[in-house]
Image (cartoon, rainbow over all chains, first blue to last red; front, side, top):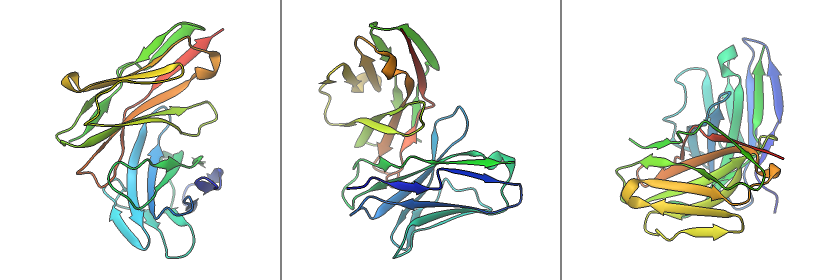
Length: 115
Length: 115
């Protein structure tokens, strides 16, 4: 059973370009979470999605950031017009549809560098 | 509001020493879960333990042990006879029952184990 997959592992963008980060959850998992880790900091929650629904996006910046988890295919975190401050590691996690407290399994992360 | 505090930014020990990583949390939820994750230099997040708020039994897993004290809102992690491979950043995290499955992370403690 493959774990959570994220690609690309490393992404370099110039200021103003778009960044697309992909996350494929573990088989059987329908809940996806995105977290951001700025350099030398802990992880901060961004958004929680279920298939075709955004459940909680309280941690998403108001502008330039969007996320989706379509019926088919991976979850996508999209950052438009990237700026240097977007440079960070972005982690995706998934969990099965179950009660509160189920373990979130993390992917290896995508390290975004904005030049 | 929910908060996790890891006051120790960095700890350095020599191999075979015991080391305790502190974690203090704040929540108003009556049901919640506490987690520890390890982030080695390679960058991925490795799940170590999950504990729910109704289970105050301490847990031991090999050289790892966890001390959950609800009275002091602490969930400390001890590594016995540390090894160089234990060098990593360790994160404590909290999941409440009013946060839509949102993990709240501490800022992490960097553990350096030297030979």
